[in-house]
Structures are given as C-alpha cells and as structure tokens.
Image (cartoon, rainbow, N blue to C red):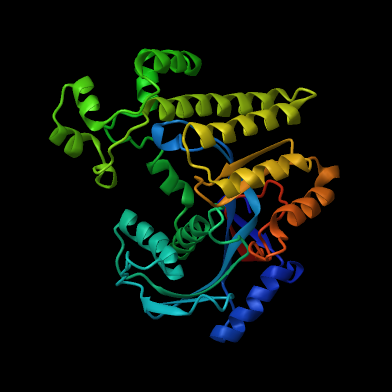
Length: 374
C-alpha cells in the first residue's frame, strides 16, 4: 500500500452497490470481469465566474455525483466503449487510430479526447485495446462538468492501463507558461496594486458607455485591421459594441470576492455562512448587471432559492442558462427543496417539468480515483 499512487484505492467491490452493479453489467456486456475502475467527480463553481481566463483564481467544489468507468485491458488493438445509459450508443474504434469528429458532440468523443491527450503527451504508439463501461450520475448540460469528468476519467483510464503515475503528468505542467496575451491579471501584476485599487483604476481609465471599434483603435493607436487580426478572436471580429468598463469591473470585483470567500472560510467567524452567502449574492448581481451572462430564468430561480432559505444563491457554470448553486443550512434543506420544486418547477402549464435530477443537494465530494479490487 505504501508504494501505490495516491490516486489509487483498494476496495471490496461487493461492499459498494454501485461498483458491484457496474461489475455485473460489465460482465453481461463483455463476458468478462473489469480489472479496475476509475472515478472522476462533477464540480460546481461556488464563486468566481468568467475570471479564470483573465488570470484569476476561482473556487470550485467537487460534488458527490460522478462518472465511473469499469475497465478491462485487452490484447487486441480495439477500444470498445459502452454506457449504462441507453441514450448513449456503443462505440468501437482502433486504439491506434483515434479520430474525433469535431462537428458532432457525441458522448464518446469526450472519452477519446482524454485518451488522445495522454497518447500525444507521451508520444505513444501501439496502444493496447480496452473494454470500458461508463456510468454517470451527474446531470448533463447543467454546468456541473459531466463532460469534463468523463475526459478526466478517460485520462486516468489511459494512464492506469499504461502503468504511468498521474503525478508525472501533473509535474510537467506545474511551470507551464501562459500564452503571451495581455490579460487583466497581468495589468494588475505589472502595476503592483490590489484588486480594490484596480477597480479605482478601472473607474479612472474607462467610461461606462460602450466603446466602438474605432474608439478602441484611437485609444490604442492601431488600425481597424490590427484590432481584428492582433487583438480580437475569430468569433469577436464582427462585434461592434464593447462594454469594457462593465466587464473589467466584474472581473476585478469577482476576483476580490473569491479571495474574501477564501479568507472567511479560513477564519471561520460565527456568522461565516451569512458572509459567504452575501458574497455569492454579490457575485450573481455582478454576473447579471456587469457581465450580463444571466437570463430571466436564472434570475427567477435565484430569487426563489433566497426566498425559501438559501443564505446565498448565484448562477454557476458560465451562465446564459445552466444552473444555480445555493448555500443552505442543513436544517432548512427538506423545506427548501420542496418549496423550490413547487415554486419553480411545478407550473400549471407544465412548461418547466423537470428531469429527475434537476434539483438536488450535495456536499463536497472526493477527487479522482482509481479503484482496484482488494
């Protein structure tokens, strides 16, 4: 046990109903027994939205819901994927000729991305084949990273089959250099000032009225062609209005809220939950007004959650739809779930009939693991 990877755990499968059921389904599907199992959790971003690609930290939490994969390496060069959910059809391909159709969001492509990423990173050829049965209980398309969990699982599957230690992969990227792009965090770092001071700089440097491309060019002393080719991304080259003031205000204030959230968690004052909830509420307001990534349905759901006992509630998972995350005292949880379900999902016209897992409670979950039978 002392020599094993921290990402591996020995388990008695018979004592874990979900693993046992997956083992039985695998045997029924492939006529054999899995050699190991891999798990990766979904995650929810508690606070910190649209600031990671600007260079700032966010505060996500692994949830209890996850993706599990039962795996058996085989001597052929064929990769066979199956899913316990009949909505996702079986798939097979050569393990040494992975082709990903980027035009189609097929479920198995996420697995292939994880496998191909490991393959390319280590420069591997002649990969062994494997049989894999996937089982997930993360609600899809909900902003809880079900697809990312599947990609992570696929990477762990491939590393485990290859006998590689995950820490080697992580160590290589520890000092990864970011692209030479002027991000908002870099502006703050070069000025050497706090996030609160950056908000004042934003107030001084930018005006609340939207900018047009010509004004941006005048400010930077560049041509429209230079703006399009050197600064704008391909999908923003046709944009005619830029709300620079509002977007910068959101990024710097949200980054400050993440640090405040972390500090409160570490210091744990008596009114900790109230303070954390207030930061979550401020985050949603900023997403709604400054970043404009909310929508009427999310705003309504947030209001309902707060009305029925949430100390804080906000959109999560980028926004423009998706889901909300709320912090709710444990003693209020049963009434909270019942009231939110009734107020938001049970409409007289049936227009918002929810899926089974649209509303659920979760605690912080564990990280990615490889399970070996004891």
